[in-house]
Length: 71
Image (cartoon, rainbow, N blue to C red):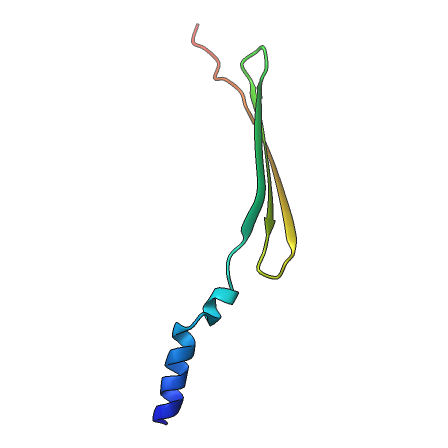
């Protein structure tokens, strides 16, 4: 029993959990454009590779309109 508990402890402290890993960012691009009325359009594109080797592309687009002024 003692050898089994020592083996489990050594495995848990070794590099085995590293294989689970996190997503790795391959590329990230962000651009913004301001219109004549003050509206700001932002595009964000990120490409990641997960721990299984799958490629994930995420695109986000946002539009921020300025608040109407007080009269």
